[in-house]
Image 1 (cartoon, rainbow, N blue to C red):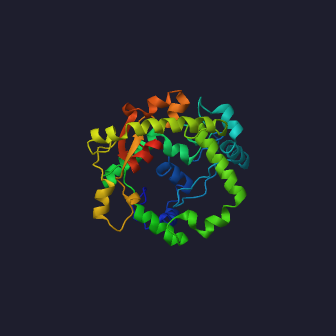
Image 2: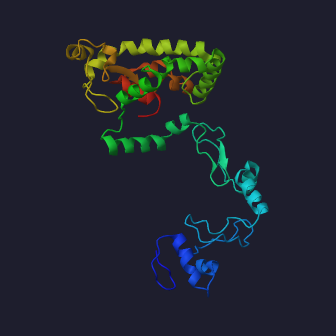
Image 3: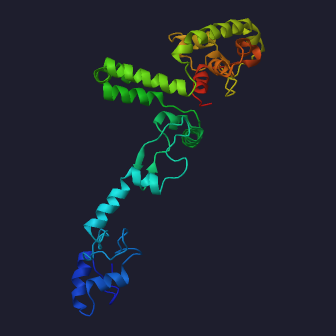
Length: 303
């Protein structure tokens, strides 16, 4: 650091202030305004008036941010006032979750509203899914990467169990009343996005589902005879239960991540909601074979 008047080197801002005493022809404020002041510094953002100079500071706060307590209070009110934002700054469509249509949370006047209403909707959006897949592909070479070992290790370290829902901590906070509230919220969310059928139509759906699976079973043998051995969605070669058992005699076949399973390309619940006949949903033209993991990912919109 040097004095910009005489080019003498100093070690710090404190040293600069001490040195400037020999330059009696210029005050600290004049020196700062001439050589160090940034654009917009020293101007109140609320009224445009001049703010107080506190001296040459190393933290960059040489000028006050506001000219008065009144301007500071007014600005704070605006930044945290939802009504002010809605009246003067809110854009069309802002504050509405693009996934489910619910209102999102207000942050402040600077940031506005959150884009999604919940982590569930954020994780379900196609933009988020594509971004996550791209990041996983770049970092790990696999867009579906999941470090299950690390997840289990973290749970054991924090809660002493491999699954957080088995922990005493969870059992204490999740009382029966809270569990019922959580289940109700979950049902409402799943009904809204078309993953579950409302309780009023449940018996009607169960009848529809039975017909679908009865039709599906008719085509099971032919489907497997035509199958090329690969996952319909990912192209990955799958491992039969017999082949998995030979290689892993001590493991249950349900632990086979590439276990083949029959899937309906158009989901049963979608067919029900869209009025497609059960026979058409269960027909071989709507059937495919994929891994259990692909089946689950497709169900939640991740494939």
